Length: 418
Length: 157
Image (cartoon, rainbow over the protein chains, first blue to last red):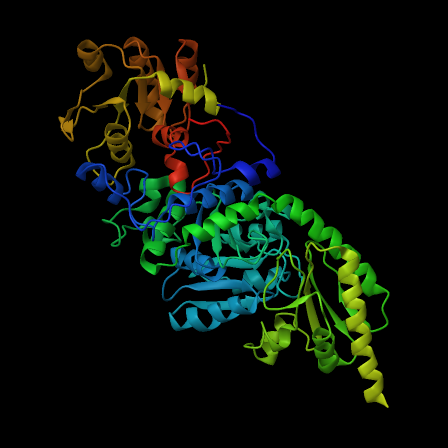
């Protein structure tokens, strides 16, 4: 038994996956099973009463999924993690673990369009209100927090605006008000930034992006620090007897594990948004190269930014302060943008980010098209904005493709001007 | 000795056989019951409640004091303490008298005087840890639940 604190790349390869004790298999087995045989009626009772660790039914836990969860908990520096069928499912579970009808959320307005609709449409219909505020306007954030507010929500790197959240400052504002800071760390990945080290209480991810790294899986994960005082009187779902679990008081019975236990034993159990074992296995494989992939993503992104800076067709560049996803605008507005995307050969035009393959999209007509003009402006989406997710191909090839497409967009611009 | 590393705590748990649990409750909602029930049903430990207010828990006889336990059962390997920090100096004195090998203070049971007393008497001491969690960390339980065990190994166990 080692007491060594292993480094990030080592944990990205090893955490959660010691050799299989039964077969010696070095790769985590895919436990493709719905349910698990109990050793005895007594053992079954202990499991159902949440007094022992073990698997009952794969909607609640599964060995392959648990290996992925433990690895994510290790990489984000959390107490534990819970995997979900998507990033939005993980985010919804974080909300439902803390909030019910009549409660309130304060969220950064610089967030993914799907998050805006989840909060402002679906949660509102369930009686949970959200106030959207600029992520760097701390006076506005403080003013938006009400007695019934259960969380402050932000993205480390806003999608697609690229706005960087000051996690330490946000954590301080949240903690001063007795509420947790929930951070979506999808665009940074724990290889570039670990919000819990800076005061965040819960981290959520769309695992579909850099964690998978290969565009193979829709998945999500939630990681909790175990440090927030859930018994501070503001979270009755955790500190009052639960009718969903034998009148257990989660904060009393589980101490620092209260949030994770309720999120799994009640929310995941009742919502049914679990991750499949096959998906967890693909994510474990993806994570093994996370550290090295992020290094090349960032290197390639810098080369692309330098290239775009020298091009007359480019109106503006929102340089990435962190990561490899960024936006730029080209002269000629929406139509030139469309011609640019239609002329690309190597870059894939699709609605995803964080793939080994380089990706491109026009947010105003796709990912953010459900938002009205005001919401779009608040989310930092301009009509001519193009979002790039720089992949791992040879940078020269990516630049060759961008060069051709910029020329095509620019030529048409000249023809139309005549 | 203060056991402040994973390997030191593992060494204690791997070699201990008996656990006397001070303040074990028969109320299923109490954390001490959860830990008692876990040790009784999921581990090889011979666990005994020490609580003057109850006769037994789940068929396991409770002793009113460590002294009464030691007289009948001999010295316990681990004295696991679920008591208010202000009351644990007396518990340590009893543990030393009973010949215990180690005192394990559960989450929040922190009393510097009691820790020093046990340490100076040559007992192994674990502070602000849960014996259930530490057992589960080393025996796969935490990993089963997506919790961060901190264990990294390529050796087959």
